[in-house]
Picture 1: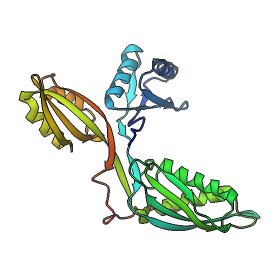
Picture 2 (picture 1 turned 180 degrees about the vertical axis):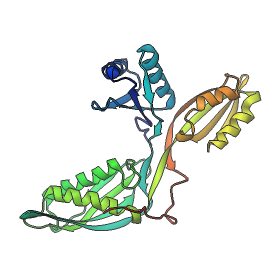
Picture 3 (picture 1 turned 135 degrees about the vertical axis):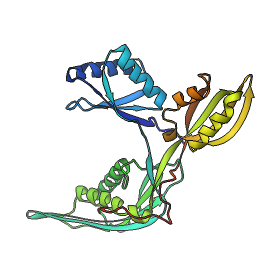
Length: 295
């Protein structure tokens, strides 16, 4: 599976309103220096969302902003880039009908929602035959599906590794439009969340930790508490190198913890490995739809 570009988001804001322009300039300079991050800014509030690959990069960027550019910042808690996916296949029949003055909106879509192979991404297909949905309306259905992919259908995280097929539907000669079909498809995706059993995926990191041998027991015990799975160990000189798969959410702040456990002698590197089901995410057999889920 290809690694997503950014795995962590964090909101920052200048403590003083007068520093909003300075923060924007500082971020532009860091981006020009090709530092590994992306950002977006709300020019009304001055808040910035930083997107980085791991918390080490986040610490580095915040350090450059606060020390190199002398900015005082309010920094939010880092948030991991979770994802949603289907756990089961289902079919949804949804009709969008709305009366607006003398005209109306009408669109009926039947969607087949399926899990896709891990790492295959999202896929949309049309299996319409016989013109039950006009060809001109099918791009609207795809836009509605893509909107749901971006925003998620249950927990607010983007969706990955799903397949959606438009296989039937209906239209009205005067009240149907591409927009009506877009709204119908987006609603159908949310409506299908209960039967398709949405599950939460979390990024798993390939972690390599180097520690003096006398601290290895403490390091491994700590990784186990962080839901890490130890894959192997090897001796390199006077150090022991541990290879493990660890959820990124459980590695936030790991640098300071490792330093404290190894008298500052421990080192680590990590890379994205895969997405895996989060243990708190209900499985297909114990899923309960969230209250208030709207069609």
